[in-house]
Structures are given as structure tokens and as C-alpha cells.
Length: 219
Image 1 (tube, one colour):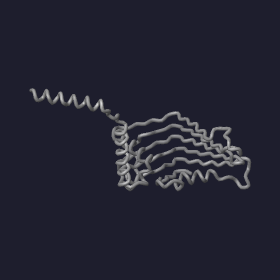
Image 2 (image 1 turned 45 degrees about the vertical axis):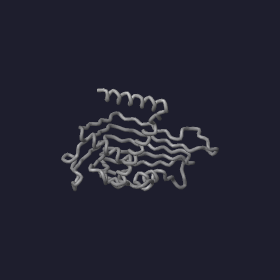
Image 3 (image 1 turned 90 degrees about the horizontal axis):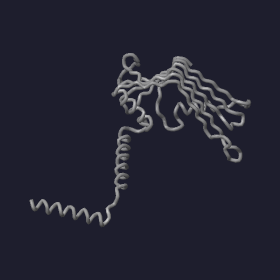
Image 4 (image 1 turned 45 degrees about the horizontal axis):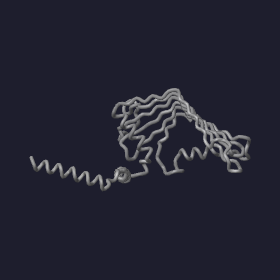
């Protein structure tokens, strides 16, 4: 595919487009051959993400994106290889803009050279024992640049936190309630870790307060 833009929308688990791609890559040949192979190549494509409850837009552009998947005959192992070349992340606060204009409305905050990611998954044997690691995930990249000012750095951090907490699936009231519960839990844990004062410590504290009051009265 070439020149395609995908508008990303956060969905519940197992309903996202990435889950559907993984299911598609796991399809095997019928009748099965020795190994099932599938290759997908993208050129000059982009991913457009517009958070529902965050005043920022993001656009990820990729010049070359390749996925190769292979599944063994007995489905005991599978390998997924991803090669990404010349990617860039852009952010914008023009949330009401109808069209996307990178030069006018967006600022580039991240650019990447070549990234190669290989994921190998192995299932347990018939006896339930693992002879190899369950997952292997080697990753390599030649260069990653992050260039931000104070505002764009704050926007990038807010976007990362928003995505990590599935912000689109929580209305603003839910997000605020989650923040309040987190703060309350932190305060409760901090209070529970305070050392309790024994009778001796309490008596010493009372004596010090009494001495201080006597000195004040004598002035």
C-alpha cells in the first residue's frame, strides 16, 4: 500500500485495528505447508490520532514500513519482523482545523532513522515444558531524535500519559475521579507509613510543650 492515512481510534481490548492485524497475520495455509509466510509493505503512509478529551492532535508519518510473519507447520512457533524507516511524529494544538497542514499547523517532535523489531513466540511442548524462551524481542535502531520546546515537551508527555491510561475510553469525569482516587490512595499510604508514637515519646513531647509554655509565661 502507498499513500494511505489511517485514523486511529481507541477501542476496547481485542477490538482495535492492531488486534485485527495480528489475527490476520496468524492465519495459516490450508492445507498447511511447512511454513506460512505473509509479507506486508507500506510506503509513505501515516497514522492520524486525535484524542477525544485532550486538546492536541498527533500525526505519525512513515516512509517505509514492512511486516513479515511466519508460522511453523505445527503452530509451535511464530516469528514477526517489523522494519520501519524514516518515521516522524508531529503534534498540533489546532484541534478545530478541518484539513491537515504539516507545515502550518504541526511541529515535529520526534524523528527516527531505521528501526528493526523481531518478535519470536514459542508455545510449550506437549509435556507443558518450555525448551526455549516464551518470547524473544530483539530491537535495534540507528538513531532517534527528540526535539522539543517547553510547550511541545509538555504536550508530548501529556499525550503519552493519555494513551497509557486509555484516555479515550474514560470521559473527563472518569479521568478526574481516577486522579482523585490516586491522590487519596497516595495520601493514605503515606499516612500509614508514619511511625506511631509510643507512651515515652508522647510524655517527652508533653514535657517539652510544658517547658515552652512556662518560659513564655515568665517573659
